[in-house]
Amino acid sequence: MYQALYRKWRPKSFSDVYGQPHVTRTLQSQLESGRISHAYLFTGSRGTGKTTCAKILSKAVNCLNPVDGNPCNECEICKGIENGSILDVIEIDAASNNGVDNIRDLREEANFTPVNAKYRVYIIDEVHMLSIGAFNALLKTLEEPPSHVIFILATTEIHKLPATILSRCQRFDFKRISPEDITARLVYVAEKENVTLTENAAALIARIADGGMRDALSLLDRCFAMGNNIDEDSVSAAAGIAGTIHLFSFSEYVAKGDFTSALKLVSKLHNESCDIDSLCTELTLHFRNLMVAKTVKECDGLIVCSKDELEKTKARAAELKLSKILSSIEILEKAAANIKNAVNKKIQLEAAIIKMCSPVSSGSISEEIEERIASLEEKINALSSGKVFDAPKNNNSVNVQEQKPAEPVKAEPVQNEKPEEKIAEQPEEAPAETASPVDDGPFYNWSDVLEALKKYDIPLFGIMAGSTAVIKNGRVIINSENPTLFDFICTDTHSRELARAIYDVLGQKMKIAVSNKEKAKASSNPLEDLKNKINSFNNN
Image 1: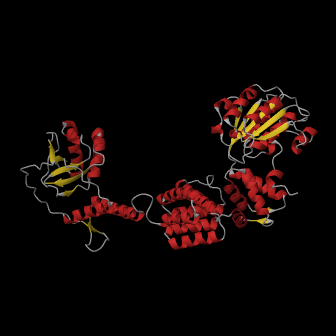
Image 2: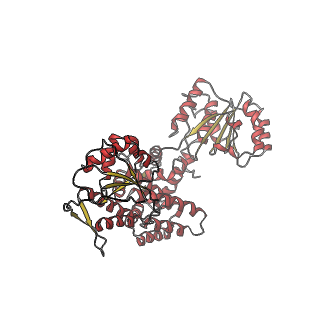
Image 3: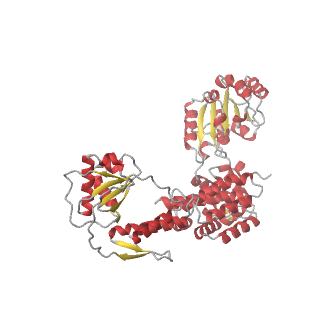
């Protein structure tokens, strides 16, 4: 009778266990020194070797000829435990034997000495499924079992176990097996089974298995049914996933915003019986790889794939903005949650694909507007270097022209101050005013003033962070959301340093005022705000 690969190739000694050296070495050391505990607790995700190590441990403690803490697998005890003829090793499924009566029977049975072996070993799998009453019935026996009894508890949900159980066991945490270890094991098994398995195909299986060796071997078993030469296409077909070619096609359509091609590809894969849940998971992992390639320089150890696929991933990541990648991952995560309870899973994935291809990101501002804002901000910053914008009335394009030197205009003295402005008195030590006043308009070099102020007055620089300024009638009027700014500037020391910073930038003394207007409500469209700033400058 054919035996499944995960059963046929289950490790028979600690040396054969992949990916759990911290567990196997400790158990071997205990066995060699004879310090065997009465109760063990193995915890970890599915397929990481908990039950396998429990069976190896049950053989090792009873083996007649142990070798370096490993069972010999040759003596009659090892062979009897392996084929099930020795009944001193009992494996219990707590999912179906979770009542108080089951534990009471176990306690009574534990009092009998072993028939053939040295220890009577109880392996209780999925122990978190026991009822509260069953846990309470097990407590005393688990704490002080007979000298010939060893308990090995295994669970995937450690948080469901009472603290009283945890404190009575030696706990071993089984980690997810690394893709490299799974790949190596799959190649070894395929070689022994006389089947050709490419490295890329083994890596794909390892990626799908998500740290579980049993899942990886089960998928390899399905691939064996398709032939003796297994490549990535064979794995994709057996697992019902899209495959790397289709994944890169999806990311290309997202980069281009090609709704039509993306939806056609979803329909094509769905008609070919591609599992929608698996496709969504694969897409999420693909965009995760793009995120890593986009943000990490040396990402070889963080992305499990071939060298060619890694280069393709880096190239595709360069085509996409990080914000688009992150928003796509968020969209796919929400879609995965919706797909589980959806009547039509395909519709949920299609909706997610449309969101990903759309220029509108997960926030309230589209990427197109963000790009235009960035472009306009760059052009506005160019004004500080002596350039202005000529924005045609019926055209969104902006031309940059060199600014002609403005003729000096003598500023008329201001008789009455506007109620919305507070004037800060200048100290006598302020630099002398020059004869040429500065033209009215936005103070485009205000960032330079703040940089200069950073050298002279750190506290005031912190208060004025985020402020703007305009020049009007020979005065610098500061706009800031900080209500304490006026009090700071009215202090002689701070006022002197601010005047000094302004003098460094403009080359002349200026009066200083603080605007007291309530901040206008922000425009719902930041692009319009920037256009208004440009138009205001051109009108002036």
